[in-house]
Length: 153
Image (cartoon, rainbow, N blue to C red; front, top):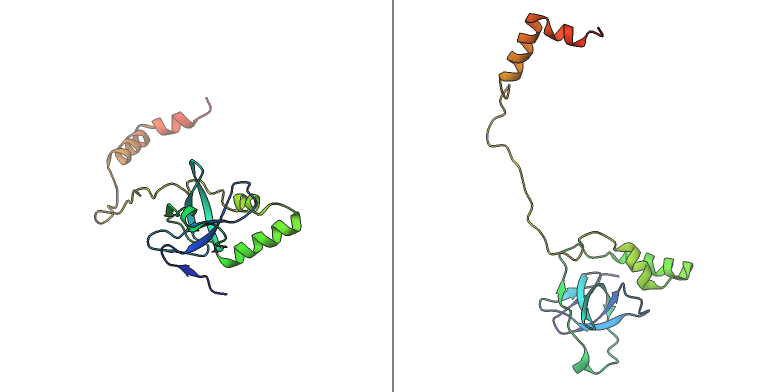
């Protein structure tokens, strides 16, 4: 079954890691979202992370349904992993939000993307970066200092 994409304003079901025991209904954000997308949603006075689990039930007053705050910049959760979490929760008698919490404990998942420092070569690599270490070593060898410093006496 291919993942469904929801247009802005459609009712979507979001599973959060909070111990509520059910999927919550929210409106899709501007730009839409799809099944498996990691989202940030309002839950009371807090903002919590969740996963778009499927279409919403729509059994509530449409005026009271709140909107998803944002879709996180992370790869969506695949359908295979979502079905595995459902089967594992049923088999182990664990609430589905607790299984989702186990699967999404990635540090920084909800943080906005940060800048990355990238290093690249500015030109050709020199044969020898500096002559100083070579001359210091050859001077120690010529005077015998290198052999004396290694002797056990």
